[in-house]
Image 1: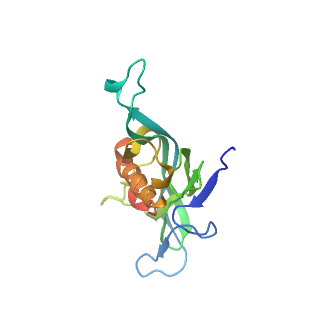
Image 2 (image 1 turned 60 degrees about the horizontal axis):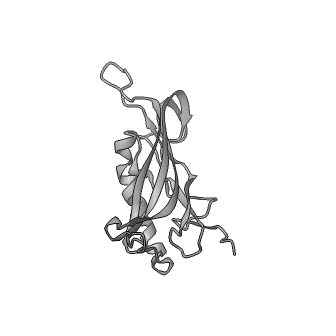
Image 3 (image 1 turned 90 degrees about the vertical axis):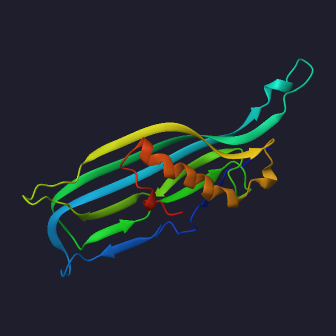
Length: 194
């Protein structure tokens, strides 16, 4: 029997209104106004497969090596885009949390033997640009796209589908999200709704 993909929203948010959002009026202003705005957008995609670390010391022609531990071998792609919108009209600063979705090869509620995690809703924030005393914009712009591999969700012994539960998921994703600024300095972990 071929396992069927299982998908669920890691944050239990409806895709119609994903993540948390806040809109803040700037100063004493009401309604839309024209200004220069700094905008940050970020996404994250992860594909993973469960792997075993075998104990080569007990390996021989007649003895299969024992599994020391199992882990997720995860490949990630992180993308950020920081830009300035000149003379644009908005109601104020805006913060939209990034929402992730897990797609697993098993319906355990955990990672399963393989799967993907992808951005359901991009992380986004907008605020007025920061300027120096002469009015020069201090915010930097640019695009960052980085890929890498990381080991996550390490457990002793061989993989046990019964121990692979949803309780393990957010901690492992948090581990990855917390190191992403080292890979892509403009990535904002606080935008990811955990």
